[in-house]
Length: 306
Image (cartoon, rainbow, N blue to C red; front, top):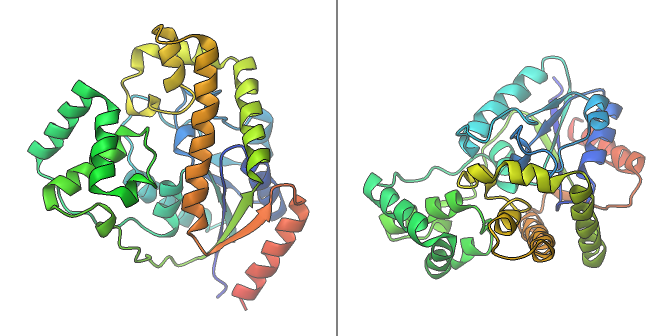
């Protein structure tokens, strides 16, 4: 019996993953699973570059604006829900597409999550209090000291991930990195990873342009409406966090926009650092014709099913 296929499209922000995923979905007459954790939340549309109504109409999409910012939803929850959905979709499709820039969420589906030790509640509470009293910089500094490897990989603006790693460091005396075994969980379907890449200056120009377009589309109003909820983990996101500083008069709008662009570029750099370590990714220049990429991947799928 021919195995089913999951085609996973990865790459940095603003490189063109959405349009390529739609090209694959149309070619295979199939459905798309988003593993972009920024796009889960229905209150965050402009700043997370949610696919347009026209793009969403091109193919069925899943995990797009399916949650509220007030919902608690972990990467483990996503692994469970996504794998369950994939199995369901395989009943009617031989090939499914998954796309997104949240590397940990992609890894949860394709690789499985590493089992982690339990952290005593008093340690979790102490780290939570440290964050609330002193801000995210204190967490960043402690993680840099205790686990420099993970420090260079993690989203440094995500307090939950920093606190999780520090909890394990404090509870065990070991680094969080040591518990990330890398032992791949075997899935009962083929996984083909497709990566889009761009020369750094071109990618940075695309990122800067995307921020300008977001502002034209109403990012300021969207972010301002979310100001009362800025303490939520979902709002600790590039594009929103910087604008909160504008609304609180910490700096002017021009500086806020500069910070959004700078931090978006830094985020893209961290994404590429992560993905470059994955030797299973088949890389393509972002200007490669979609039909050519689909054809190349189709040939690989035929080979893997022989």
